[in-house]
Amino acid sequence: MTDVKTQIDDTVKANDVVLYMKGTKEMPQCGFSSRVAGVLNYMGVDYTDVNVLADDEVRQGIKDYSDWPTVPQLYVKGEFVGGCDIITEMTLSGELDTLFDDSGVGYNKEAADKIREANA
Image (tube, rainbow, N blue to C red):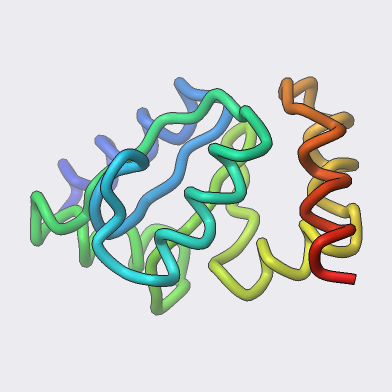
């Protein structure tokens, strides 16, 4: 498991935004992963996706790494942000915009506003 932890740690630290998910950003394999990937895709965030279904060790390893029991898991600048419910809440409250702004992560502010308008 140490090799997997090192692999995850390297991935999380080498990329500004990483989404561990079921499936890929182009083809999510579960509703929760689809929701988070959909938000990031719509907002134009440049992120790395890691398909946990492709490797059982990574699938369990990411849960151990974050001490969070579910996937998807979003990391920004090496820090665990949360799963689907947390990302949804942060998107609707504007907290995700603030996190991206504070972290220097590029995104489409108009798209973020449209998500909030559509869910108001």
